[in-house]
Length: 117
Image (tube, rainbow, N blue to C red; front, side, top):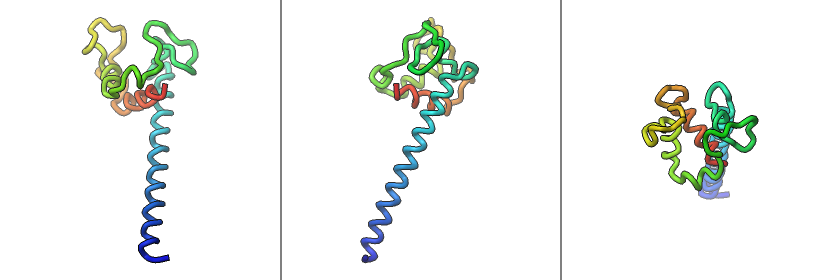
């Protein structure tokens, strides 16, 4: 095997490893977001929303399904969770980010999860 082909093989293996690591991080964020969304003391999404896989959901807010189709712009969903009162002053949804109930990282993880619904 020539030095060039060894370099090519090494580059290919590193690229594959980086891709697998990226997938693992993405799945970890989805899992964390799911945990937060279903956590009655933190994200608490189930209090108001039906979410597939959640127990004892509320019916105040809309069912959380087809989220990528409904919100193709991820930033819109982040903004809604951060402070929906900016868009809809009459909303019942708490401003999770503005009131520091959830961190930016936690909101991002919840959005990662919601985009899988």
